[in-house]
Image (cartoon, rainbow over the protein chains, first blue to last red):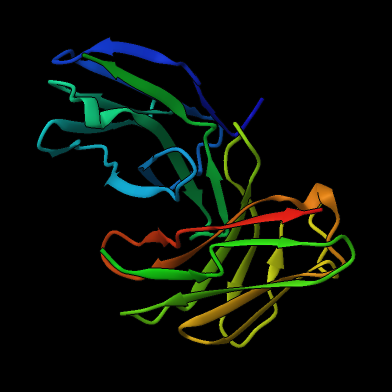
Length: 110
Length: 116
């Protein structure tokens, strides 16, 4: 089983829709979690950190569920500019182990 | 967010040559830098973790004699791909760890290496 698993998609959604992605991780010792956004042929850019208490930034909400070992990202009111690949990152051992998911591709359609 | 630069952004070289890629943290000091490789339609794969003043820690399957990493200062790490071959063609991205409350990493813009 992979340490971090993501549905690669693509998720095709209309503008204004709400879309949610999940990312599961296998190692319960994982400590830190992040969502990054990567545009085609560009570097990943930090979207937000993920906490058990939830983290909201505008239209984006991230959540961590330690019991079920997954993190989620919710995007409300999707914009065309949200089209990208969303990568989850799981870190354990104080950055001794950094694992990226394969990424979920989102395409927002006019 | 913190700014990380990478140079060059693109390089094309002949098989057998060595290529050096620089990663700099521009507005902060990074005790830890990471080097990743990303093949088309695949996720980022961590190659090595680089700590200033010490030897890099390589991930399993990454040849340390082929991918030389030097982290000479708190703002600069270099990756040298020695005797590059076409299968080394990839997108190489560095990141720097920012020791703030979020303890996250910021990425450089990447270097696209093509070995002919």
